[in-house]
Amino acid sequence: MTPSAYECAVLLLDAIPGLMRAVDSALRQRYGHDTATPSMGQMRMLAKLAERPWSLSELATAHRVTPSSMSRMVDVLVQRNWVERTTAPDDRRKVVLRLTPAGYAAHAAMRDVAREAAARLIEHLDERQRAHLYEGLSALYALIHIPSDTGRETTTGEAE
Image (cartoon, one colour):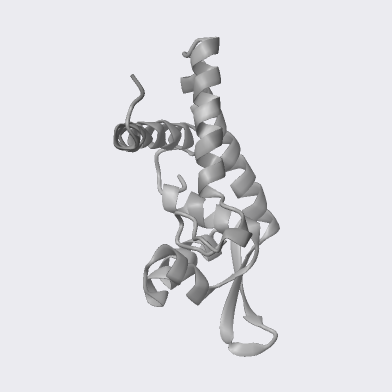
């Protein structure tokens, strides 16, 4: 019997917290248990900024927080020398955020730790299960990353 879309959604959303705990645990092993351990929010922020520079207001809108909340989040990344604030050439009032070379390196290292943690979990599956997981995740990825000519929005709330 084929599971319903709802049953798939329940399973996916119930599985994600466990995966994120495994990633968080791997990050803590890599960076230690003190305040130097990057948070999942910081990891997501670095991933966003690795795509392209963003204005503070764009990031706040994308993350559905106020600009002042986003500014406080960014402060931590600036203090770690992972992000730099610059002024937009066309509007001196606009703050543009971009990764520093150290930020790109931190993003790559955290991404690799996360991928390795997920791979360690997936290694417990047999070949057939891995093939099914890959097929399902590929379909989900394609659905989330809808081509821009459709005019639909992705699940991140950004128009594609």
